[in-house]
Length: 431
Image (cartoon, rainbow, N blue to C red; front, side):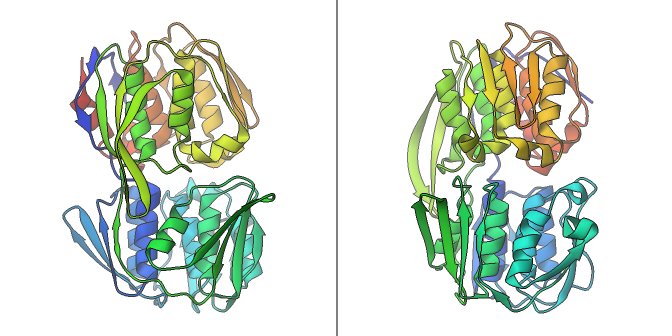
């Protein structure tokens, strides 16, 4: 349990932890490349450690330095693991590594923790089977643990109806070792870190926006070359402190080195629409990714907004903290097209609805989202996190700006993506 009390002001500057999506991909792509890849400022969290542990079990040499990790690439030539590979709580690790394991001419088994073993895997298993991988597991391959016997693959064209970046990444990495061309078609462009990083490591990636949506293609037989990858600050982690400064009574925060990739900045676009008061300074590009510093001040007032299905992929992880902002906004807000939230570390739609109701907010639960009627004042409550890091952090921010005391159960679950979260709050607030 953790008690959260009202702050007087925000102050100073902060560099939130590095981006989890980019860190996972830097570790995995570095291991697939020839030569060495130096990953600078990686996020070291429970999820990314799971990725590193699996890569080590496949024979990858990893050297840990201060603020950097050196990956000695295997050029897709891994060794058969002696034990079961454990993705812990990381869906990104599990789904992307299924694509990598499918290229290997050996037997492997992939599992995860209780939460991950209940998350759907057929979305990536089915297209990998179509490419030629032999994958089996519970519920016809929909649940971990899964056994994989990979080897010779052929390229396919796959319609990625959920615009899942994990599925797209898995198929592209399998496609680099498949015969012919592998093509992924999406109704809306999902986060494109894999495409950007593949280009950074020397691969040819063809992207075609057209009527069917967005198409990404890779030709089989390409070799990746190790390089240096800089990991920017995670926009999802920065969103909590952006929201805190937006709702704070006074002060300002400078958030450094924040990733501003257009497939990830949906939260910031919607906050601007609500009346948020922030600006981007020192905009630049590093390792094929746009980044900048965010200067955030309290908003005079916020107004309700609608989030449409096509906007969801660019802010899927920020919906819990966006929902907290909506609770403080004037008027009715609505989120649609976010059914994917039901299959995260918790059913995030239900977690958001239940906890906001406890705080006195009028919320309607929808199958693919919710509507929130903004309240003048929110009351204190005991927040049920369902051991979900994003629910814990989102409602902690609410607790810092309301008059009543708020209690977070399982505050330690923030370690999945933001181990220093509670410590960083104390650095930038005055009580």
